[in-house]
Image 1: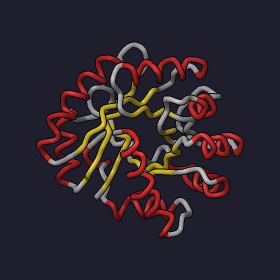
Image 2: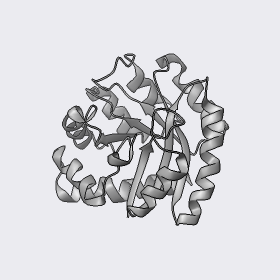
Image 3: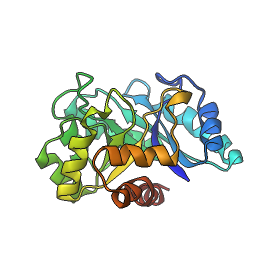
Length: 217
């Protein structure tokens, strides 16, 4: 069964209602997904409250949904504050929009995210430094291998350093539209395309994702 912990609905820049995204994921044999719409102080409460309502409805499809957020373009010095507030408002998962090479994310975002105890996944961290990957391994921050083309160009860099220092990884889609959803087989291909062996890819797609879900729920 597929686990995908980074998805967007029309509560930010996605195309679907949260419940429609959940239904489509259920039909594609997903076991667990997360609603992680783009968020900052301006919309945290609204996104979390609305996502939680449709997460409850999605249980009728046999799907577990974690209502959460992707904190996006927040100044690095404020990441801890916003992440803690998200958790207090009921977010089950906090993803940070990392220093992808396709957007002007503020330098220091990766580091401050890893240092924050309320952050669960650092998404598409671009050319993340060796020092930050070491810290991610030590602190248990999960690094993302992404299937989203605009962010995936540095998957190989992320995977190589994560393997070197023992940081854990998961494969997410950063879904914005129905066509972005992927199968288990495709998730494994994405991981192996980043340089992982099959057994390592399976660990990211299944074991680490499942362990994180158990921790969050």
